[in-house]
Image (cartoon, rainbow, N blue to C red):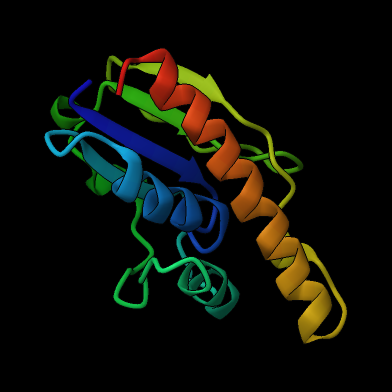
Length: 136
């Protein structure tokens, strides 16, 4: 494993949370990135729910997938559920974890944060299995 890329459309919530979590879980020699097909901005709720568990992504920026070098990625994990996931044209293992977009949840602050926490916790669970299966 040399590089993991998390993809979704806006690169604002799911993929940013996955990147933040994976950076703390991956072996030191593995590069972890995230990107989207139509990047916007990192959602403040994503920053908040990772900060709650000691991970700081406050300096992360949304990135476009076309800026990611295929030579640095051997695993692509797409996170889209209800929208069409971006394509990555590099030669890489492809894994799809369709998760609902927490940014689409309407309601008050606590309801939105609850959706982001649920996404964080599910991604953490899946990443634990992912890295354990690869001996990391």
